[in-house]
Length: 304
Ligand code: 13P
Ligand code: SF4
Image (cartoon, rainbow, N blue to C red):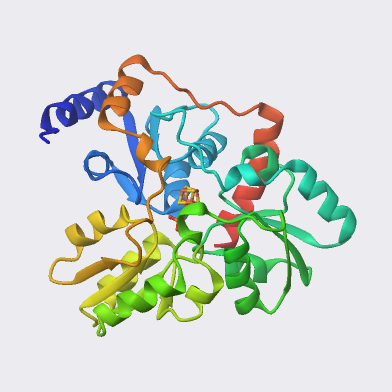
């Protein structure tokens, strides 16, 4: 499909509004192509913290756009599709955190950035998949209340030796959790020379057989630098577009063809254009929540 007309309209409007487009690595190819910055949750929050644009158009899911707004309360943050909600972030409630704190007095609470502002406001520090180990190691307590991803909790537990208490008990990302050991074994049979590179949201047993585990940006970096020529990628399939574009001459195979995050894909070029044209779908976070959540996000940025 020829998207060039829509893309040039978006680029022209972006200039007029002094807007910047931040997009996650799972976005549709045509949306990635209009982004000023593409990255993982950590890179996107760093970029949001330093931009001097007046408007941030966030092509990602709700918690990412909320983080951008918390870091830029005076700026306009737009999310092109209001239905771009992360189902894993929805699993954790404030009540879960309050209860866990009562049950484990003295334990610090570290929350994955894939959470809503109301829960971030209740934690000691936020982390992303790229810095979770560093953040947990920087905490004083040996017991850490950690949520909402059970698989990321496994990754952190193995590398920090700390006692990790998951909240909620069984939170997972539906897109990553369905990548099975059988999937990667089959992919390895088909591509015996390929390295298996996965995201820490995949199930524990898949992590345990991987050659490398990293955030989406870390996966791209690893494949760029590795002397290997073939890679099985255990994360959302949208990342392959950027990998093929930026790493020519190497081959990438998805660990599972089913690994698609449906809500990430609700953002289309038409919706990006419409949100910029009408300045609609503004992200708002209540001020008292934003102030508390900001402390936890800034603590992460300081640690890392
Ligand atoms: P990254 O921070 O690694 O890009 O991950 C975000 C995410 O939602 C993974 O599912
Ligand atoms: Fe949320 Fe999973 Fe989609 Fe990432 S891939 S945004 S964790 S549902």
